[in-house]
Image (cartoon, rainbow, N blue to C red):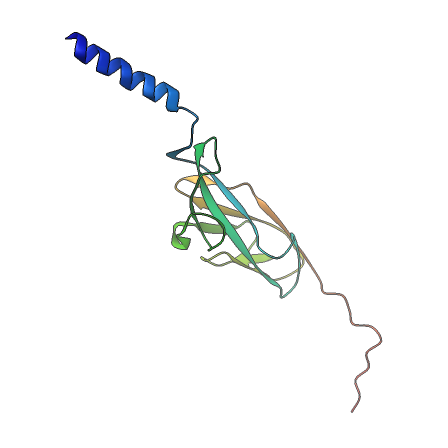
Length: 137
């Protein structure tokens, strides 16, 4: 090995070491997911949309892509998969729309690139009865 090639190798190693933890990498590390407009308690018949994004590693917020505009990164909604632990209580579409079916508990999981989000708990309650309203004919 010549001294020039050794020097070049050393410079590349130094650049790689110096770059660790700076900016963003191309390595996906996490799926973040949450409801857009609702908390985790829904009433039977309600719907709620989940927004999700895949983050790359790095010391900055590095959004790889997202399920919706305004959540960072490019929109690539078809790259996410959604699953309900209890479809009898809450179903979820392939676009992240959750529908409250009946009273109970369910967990929604969002996946992308082999990564899985933390569970999004959903509590479905019966809508409150309307009081004081009488039907008039």
